[in-house]
Image 1 (cartoon, rainbow, N blue to C red):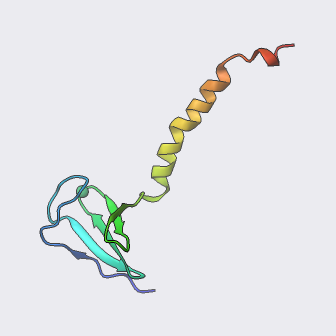
Image 2 (cartoon, helix red, strand yellow):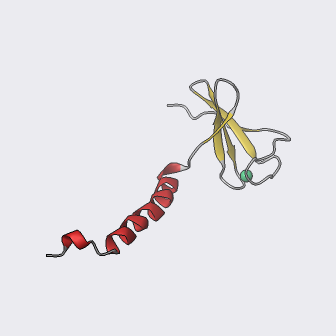
Length: 85
Ligand SMILES: [Zn+2]
């Protein structure tokens, strides 16, 4: 396994934090990847050269799932007349 060569893109501006010269770019399996070292934003470029934002690990997924879980719990707090005997 060889580490992909990451190189900074001169003049590139991060779409997330607008910082300049913080974008690193590398190639994985023929797909260009970008990453901002300032804010951690990362995306890939699809075949059309369009930016496809990448979710960072499972932390993002868990953060998104959290509100949904509490929402479900809130629903359970409502008394359900059908459960009363
Ligand atoms: Zn950034």
